[in-house]
Length: 441
Length: 191
Image (cartoon, rainbow over all chains, first blue to last red):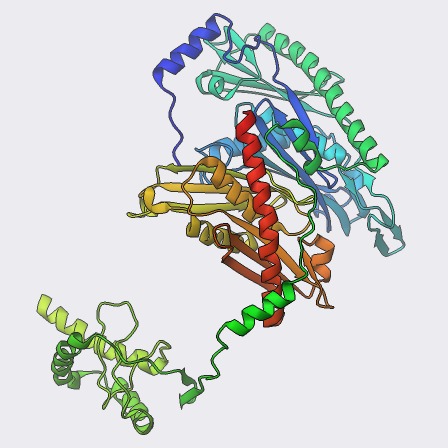
């Protein structure tokens, strides 16, 4: 689907609003939208909503052999996907530039910052390590994908529990969640990205741009920071030239925002932990209904299946019994067989004209390939006894060069084409095509 | 809208009827495309086959002839899987189509039955029940006359058992349609 382009009036309107320090949704320049975190039923699954932008994150793990140049480190794999439901412009095959940019940012933010201790993921040095895979799906695009994705990623990683493992000499035992409680990943710090949109060559600055604002911005500055005020990643794109104190100001704003968001994440993780411990219900089925007015929950309903057997028997007896006739396969020659015979064709008029055509073709068929002839005669000799009085059938092929095969000479055609038959049609079709070619020349 | 029996959740998003690229255009009806995204990993063959199944079911109810030369895109994202995933996808698809306001000839719902080795029918099985079952049957039942739009089975069962499962699924469909009715009523009365 095509994305609707931004009209010029809308662009002008947005830029004017930014100049007057006004935003479409009423926020201040440095305000973030509401962040909402909800967890799924299994460990490592969460949905983060930043305003209307929604990202689903899922962490999974697998035991694999390590990379040859890093035998004692686990493997991290990040994958961000822009789901086609996020925006009409996102199609399964396209939108690669934005996708690559976002993926690289996520990787740099989470991998290069070394927030996850990969040494602790090693089970047997050089042979088995944990591969941690983080899948991010963008469910709705309303601007600032990178922030929402980084929050979702780090929350999912903090929430995830991997199976406990014990090594005795050469033997590795992986315990299921029932045998031993799964173990959380060892995470040093939580880097969170904060995006700044710049307008008018860096004069105006907005934090957490929405989708409309992103479309009209000049450039974007992304700073990933953790709560200890360490910058993990910084990226400026769009070609805007920023002055030093602008960047410093942005990093100060980032520090404030990251502190708030980290606190929110900690609270959400603690809440979820509490609910799971108390044995309460958790998962999307629980978290989503409580927040939306449009969702409706139904308790599991018992279905009356008492009379099901009788009803089923009724249906069976009323239904026609399956036909007792089982078509026997007919063997023409070794390797070629035919099941079933066709029915009489009902195109009465066509038959005559086709027969004339076929008769004409017969005259020309003497020049046909000899191999075809030979095969044909072999075939007809075996067929003649069985098929003499069968009616003529039109082939079911959709090619234009459909021909009626004379019952006396050639075996009739049925739905299941055999090798021989195909050669026959090809021979006939070949002739017809040859005739047409001759006519064309 | 995310319907979820137990802990299985599927999120459906619909775009359309909208402009379609030249090659996919059908001159007399809308071209329906279904995309199913699993939670972990890239979509594989199973997702493709499920997409085709959902597409054929939806095409049977969507009145595509009212919107020729357009495309309707249905995207399904698996949020969590705890059994009966295919019927959850069917339900999500139907509610999505309904909420999007597309013209439909009838609604449909998905019901999964599992036949355990003793022959007992279990409706809406969990993952564990599905693994222990001898056969798993999924039916898409339409709302007008409780006819079967789609039937797909995994495993082996006799004809009688299949008919029994089908009859049970038709009963269950009544409950699901009542749920559709109630949730739509609630949605349009308050918002």
